[in-house]
Length: 588
Image (cartoon, rainbow, N blue to C red; front, side, top):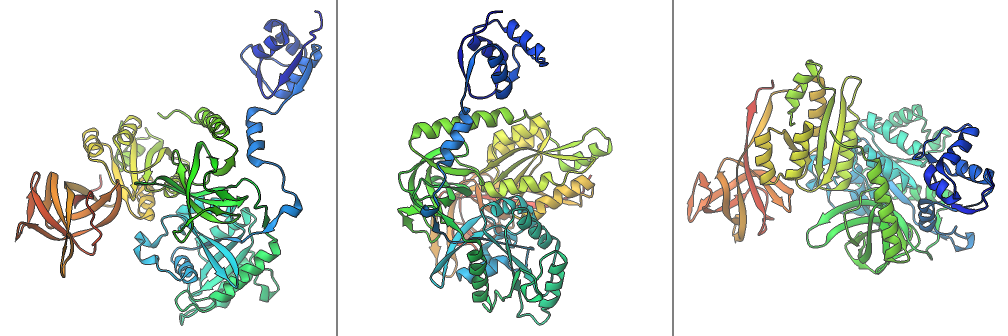
């Protein structure tokens, strides 16, 4: 066979038939040559870059190897290496970890000296945010990670962007399972730990016991000859908080944190949510470079142009440098928490990178497989017919959705596998119920409502839809289903929905919603869920139900009424009030 005198370019894995085309020979000839080299390959099989180059050279071609499109994109996103003289000191990024109820949020509040704890459902920080505080003229950035073990995935991811981890341990409680988990995360992410021994103002506080417990887990206090700074603090009184900030700065100085501010920005999305009126909004932590209004960016498979930047205090800013968290407006779709974020030269580049990533993601996703309830699932489990518990998860923000999915997937054991088919943000829609019905899945909503058409479909198709405000309850329910210990369950009976058309301020009573009952009926002794843009903003009893001047016990569809809610004054026009009761159903 005559030598092939060709010049070919290889930029990644190549199909046998495409390589034959480039070489200008028949595919059969190429296959013969491959067999001679000990490689069995068909016409439509891929050869890796190295093999393709060797065969082409054997056949007398000159080969030029170029980076594949993906590699070119990654190089483009990474940019050039920073020169040492371009680096400037940057503030440390701190994640606060620890066992639930050990006082992480209160400590963060004390540091920020604001109050956000009281309003959180179940005492868990539901949304990741970030705040910047000044201490002795230096900035420290705190990531507010949710503290429950269920948010392990976010915490693990939070630790990827973290420089220093603050481990909060209650002096009266000591080391708990989640404390150990947090230590392991910090270790896995190779992040130094500063321990805050909290609640030292309590009479039963025993800091020395905490220190010896931690020493057994490899964290030896510096005053015992180890290298871990441990600071006694009280989030309630504020004692020791200054010492804690001092310890964080000492730890940060040892790390010599630096970044180049004079380059296009790169960072990480730490939270993303859909905002009515502002569209998709994400909190981005800038790792290096400076992010400015007008920059074109790519984040995961999403692109956009920065329309506005808002700092942790809610002020609009023109730019954000290394270590700075900012809320970014201008995404064309919702990115996912944990996605990378990089500024590019123009929209064409950004679209190319995003499209390629979307194709790759599509290729990796496996195709998904009638409705079941948790009780039926246990029954089927006994009959040994089913081995998968399929779930569709919807939550109010990405971070919660992803964390819940990972926490539930972790409940799998040898006999039962929990499969999360779909994770999404926003209220539960018909599509979610259809997916659950088609794949025998259960729909779990976290902090979101259920659209009325979706509810009708779920009732008709007997799809089990469960909504939760507190993440433990969701996990416990699924765990019980897997163990088959479903206690008598309270079934929610939706009585009706009403739409707020006007809001009246009544002296000594507060806000009363002038409502129109759209379907079902409103009962005075029912409970109400307030839905705003599909997200649950309040749940509680009805304080007053009136038609004209009279107190009434119920109002049917098609009529107007005034509804006052207990302990909730933030009723707004456009809110949907969902009235329901709970009735006990014996577990089957």
